[in-house]
Amino acid sequence: MKVTVIGTGYVGLVTGACLSEMGNHVVCLDVDPAKIKILNDGGIPIHEPGLLDVVRRNVAAGRLEFTTDVERSVAHGTIQFIAVGTPPDEDGSADLQYVTAAARNIGRTMTDFKVIVDKSTVPVGTGDKVRAAIADELAKRGLAEMEFAVCSNPEFLKEGAAVADFMRPDRVVVGAEDERAILLMRALYQPFVRNRDRLFIMDVKSAEFTKYAANAMLATRISFMNELSRLAEKVGADIELVRVGIGSDPRIGTHFLYAGAGYGGSCFPKDVKALAMTSAEMGIPSKMLKAVEEVNEEQKMVLVNKVVAKYGEDLSGKTFAMWGLAFKPNTDDMREAPSRVIIGELLKRGAKVQAYDPVSAAEAQRVMTGWDGLSYADGQKQALEGADALLIVTEWKEFRTPDFEAIRDSLKDKVVFDGRNLYEPELIRSFGLTYLSIGRN
Image (cartoon, rainbow, N blue to C red; front, side):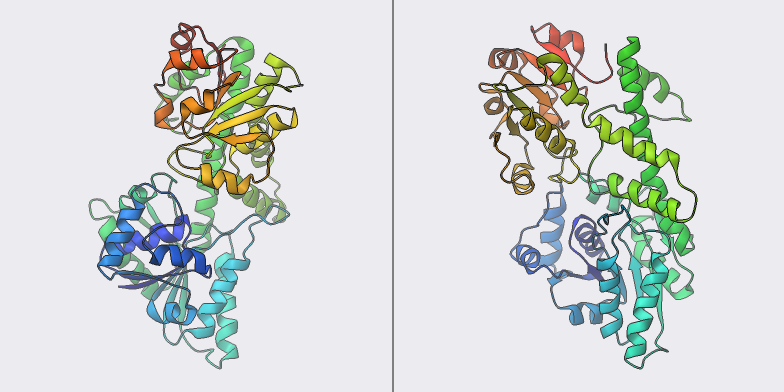
């Protein structure tokens, strides 16, 4: 099947690569020539485990191509995925300018039937706007009768495991009302759901809503556990034991119950805001979504508050090692990363920060250019050199079983602030370290 994917970010590139892996001929379009050059030179512009191998294999096989040529990309695919960014606008709503621009480009150049698929995370009603944009462009060309279909196919990929999620999905949601489009989408995804039918067909608006509802639900679980973690500290309970206790209830389950330094990334923050904005626009302001967002912003300050409680507001002369910068492991994504808030607050109080991340240092330097007092280390031990205390912000695997004796011998004050609860308190304290974690007495 011939497929076009518009956008080569996390969603678009993974979608294009994985669809080509199943034998489809995919052309990926991006208006950023720098991205396309990287891809055509054999690299990828993001860090995603396993993705580079899939891309190179399918480029070599002739099934995956990259271009900046809009007309060529529209002519190629019967199915046209729109996988461009939908950043939050000033009021928190999703900015759809890139989605509608992609839709207009399709309408401006298409010459036969197309299935246009919203893969980007978009508010309810975006399908209607995409349909209207394409119809308007066709009408300008005197082709108002040309047929096309608009679908919603929200992504449920986890950064750091996106390839595996796409190849072995736990569900595929397709919002479509056109029978031809439904048949084509079923055929496209059939190889991915052969073992068990995980493809759910619904109307477009319900599919759009499903994506926002899923992310809002997961964000709510995280914020709820983070709020409970603060209470646990006050009453003398251990949030890690509480997590195990409630997670054993099958009605609750074990996922997204980890207390920490707050969530970040490209999805949860903007999707919670966007759904809250939609709710307000419909006259049903969501108190719960507002609370989820507020709790998360407060949680990004938890480690800072612990540092201040230990050392006072004036941190002049203090140097902190930081392990982890990306918002989660196995990605270089720094969008809404808690580390950015934590570093900013420490620097504002006069401290210096020596940061290490296995993958995201380059991206961190790009988004935090000119932050005086922030330096980057090449490894865990280098970050510790001359530091008073250690802050752990991202739960990379290599941080799970470190050399505690080396940590103790390197840190002047022998203090570890753990924003991800990686260690057993008794164990780390047995090495002579003061251990301050999240939601534990």
